Amino acid sequence: MGRHRAETGVDVLKLDVDAVPVLRGAFVDALAKLDQQLTVAEAELRVPAWAADQVSADATTDFNRHSVDSFDHGASALDQLRAYREVLADAVASLDATAADYAALDEVAGADVTKQGAS
Image (cartoon, rainbow, N blue to C red; front, side, top):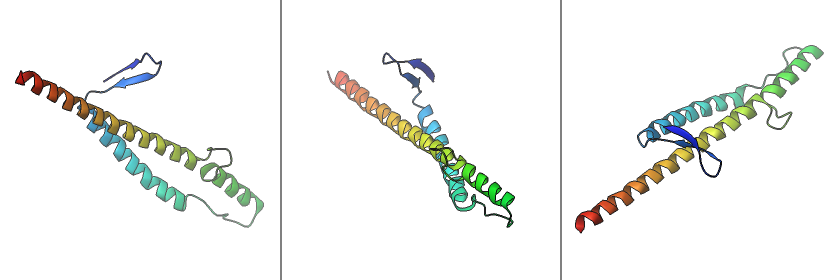
C-alpha cells in the first residue's frame, strides 16, 4: 500500500490486491455501526425541556440545535455524522470499484497467458 500524486495532481492510494477485501470489510463494519448509532440518535437524541422555566427552555433549544437541528448548513452533530456516513459509503464504493478493476485485470492477464501458451 502506498500513496503518490498522479499526473493529474490528484492524490492516489495504491492498494495491494489482498488489502482490498480487508479494507472493504473494515469500512462496511464501520458503516453498519454508524447506521445503528444514527438510528438511535435520530430517534432519541432530541431532548424536551425538563422544567417550565426559561433557563431550561433555552438550554433545550441550544442542545437540540447543536446536536440534532441544522441551525447552520450541516452544523449539527447529527449532520456531521450523516456526512461521515457518506464518506464511509463512498469509500466502500471506491473499494468495490477497485476490486472490480483488479478482477478485470486478472481476466485480461489470464487471457493473455492463454493466448501466449497456445502459440
